[in-house]
Image 1: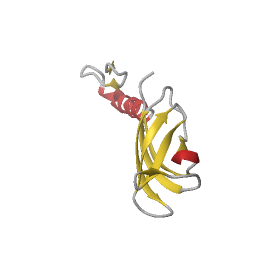
Image 2: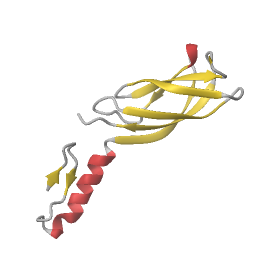
Image 3: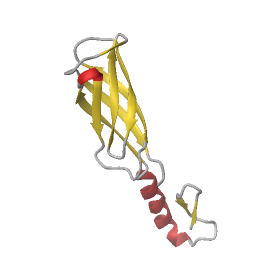
Image 4: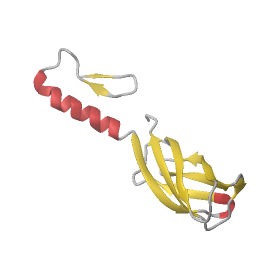
Length: 117
């Protein structure tokens, strides 16, 4: 069994065919531990900051891509990821180019890709 520079296992051409299922299972398990996707229903705090908690922690802070699906209270909402940690990320919410205040509900879709430890 070989491994990539990033630590992902793969079957070698010389590995017995009987071990193929285990090799693919190991690859799937290692890959699954590196990404997480989902959505979070959140409410903004002061300065439009929303906090999202991952259902499972990463060994190190992942890269996060997040998209605002919707927000209550009007239109023209947008936002961006401020920071990410091993347990979640913060997202800043804007409406028509201005920060929103506390109490705005939103749904944020995200993809977190783990950095190998």
